Length: 565
Image (cartoon, rainbow, N blue to C red; front, side, top):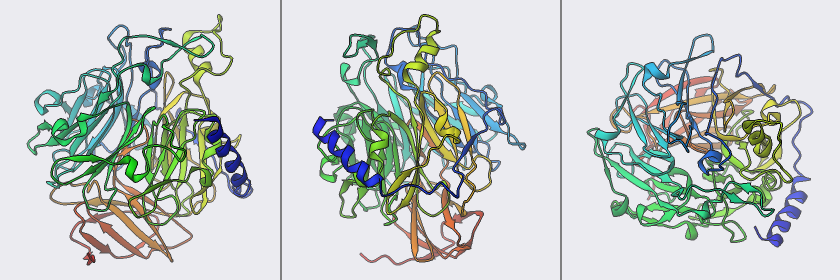
């Protein structure tokens, strides 16, 4: 970011932040570390051995989903490996949640112990049989696993026609052609050739920036509905551009009831692929205002969160970035324009010294507005960092790149205040954080946090906020096709205020979660009105629901809502 622009962000944000301090006097904002209690025993490795190969610093993601349909959230964690040796002595891990709240490693039995150099995961019910399948992106060959419905998975990569042999990052499933079957977008990073290290401005060896390598083209596959996929990247236009993609989210950005793709590019303008409805896409990020930031600068985009931060019933975008940049908030104005509102949001200054990766927009205290959790970890050494002859290589990696995470509370109208305190383990733990997911781990109605740390342990944080409002969790179900209604959105009315949530799987950085939507109700006893817009644009109104329950909304059981053209 240019110095003048950086200074303007700093000055304006400091002024605004002075007017929006969070109230910490009456509420305990802690997220407690329950990793040991839950017996979540996972150690990520990326094969760090002093060669500074780029995949070593990028970390991995994971998934929160009910793989065995027993009603609770299980955990899938993607691992790296030993890149230089072209092999891995590590594997991805699937942890099944037990009745007592602990987790059990069932990776081998379930068939999800892929030992490739892993990056991320994408969830989707690709065959509409009622259970979630999973795509694993790798540095190398990707994998597609079909859920057999008996707590096991089968690798169908070859027969499905999935061809990934480069460096895949994030991926997402959604229905781009309204045939009821979920299609697959795979974001790709760089060639990673030649295998090399770079040097910082002082001449010390460090990891390269992505522009040291050639970008790759993303891939798009159409689901044929018979267990196979057809590559349509070139025909669609998606694969005609090279980019350094790290994040992707699929949703209808222009209100035509067709799924589009927003792509977070590292050090290049972001992409917004608008679905034309004929199997092709137009790249429109510049026209929509989300290719670059307010000052016209490209940024190192990593993670993506989608949600309505200012309660105007429009979905906004929050992107995480490199240190010396800000994380960037794009507000939807409703006229097909996204506006950089980072400065006035209060999200700017706290993020300048940090490198954000995983990100989630979630209602932490259940007051009806979305808060922010960010997993931080540098990709450039701490200033003045030098090798410590007395430390091991992983200890030095931690010292060079570890950072505290960030928790920001929404104080209204899309304005945020720092919620990190010395008593909040989520904020004080020092790791090189990458993937981050929020979900109701312990089924008590509030949202907890899972963090995936590069060359470190996964951490599970229980929501221990002392003064939370009521809640409502809703799952959408289409009895025929696109069973989880991916691409739908749900609106609820509480008093005079409306809330909206998108129904998506992909979230944050290299990660995915179940499609259940969570609402905070504050002190209200019920959601007074519930309106679902299904993926093809049909609208249904469902009866009011009392607080503190999980409810399945079945398509066709509500009352149709007329939509004016």
